Image 1 (cartoon, rainbow, N blue to C red):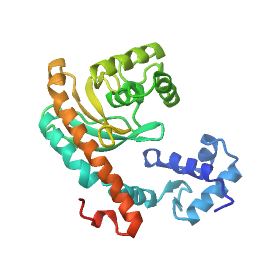
Image 2: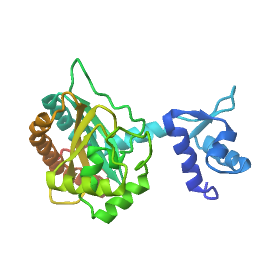
Image 3: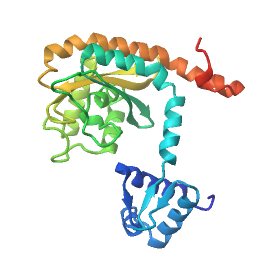
Image 4: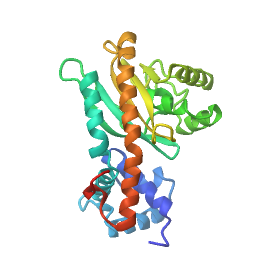
Amino acid sequence: MSHVPAERCLSIIQLLADQAGELPLGEIAERLDLPKSGAHRLLATLVDLGWVEKDPQTSFYRLTMRLAILGQQFYVATGIPDLCQPLLDRLARESREFVRMAVVDSAALVWVAHAQGARGGLMYQPSLATNVVPLHATASGKAWLATLDTDQAVEIALKHGGIGTEGAYGPNAVRTIGALMTELEETRRRGYGLANSEAEPGVTAIAVVIRSGNDGPVVGTVSVAGPGVRMTEVRVRELVPALDATAAELSDFWPLRTRRFRAEAADGTPAHRRVAV
């Protein structure tokens, strides 16, 4: 494997992971701008290593379940299910809306956990196909960007794209850098991110950041989202204290999560078998 370009192999895995699709060799090569012979060699290596499988009837390539299993193992090891999920579930019950948590991953936000609080009637379920948060069009994205230097925030938002794209996202999504800068300043003043028919039409969301140990670096966001007809201005203001309280508790848990990993590294005891103290 050492002679195989890792970046190109990862590109193939990311391509096949998109909506768990399967693709023929020619399309994989074309979409990744690779020579067909080179793409074939990379795919053959991934097949040998168990990451990809080739359909014997169509000759299309698709991912095996290995990546999903690895991702699930990592998700459990992070401590999110046992440390964070109960807090998200509680906030969902209190708000009776959809609650999500995202974590900072390099220069991006990625949704990692959620809880549904609505029990009937009009119920919001996200329609966005990706786990990567659209930074300029979501309450979570704006809450995080607002904690950064303005130039850095704009640079990160532009890197993710979508600003100014006609027809993308909801009707109120910001379309210019100037509008984004104004929105971030308003977010700082307000103390929480707000998106009204921005990521998705008819959906209103609010979000606040999670810090490691309250006064540490930003590690993620927690948000509440629901149909705009319910998430009125008055209802948003009512939900902010509960959202802030949940973010504070998640912030308290974050150093504990880090200590679990350090303790496991020190003596080899799996983190999920430890008693947290």
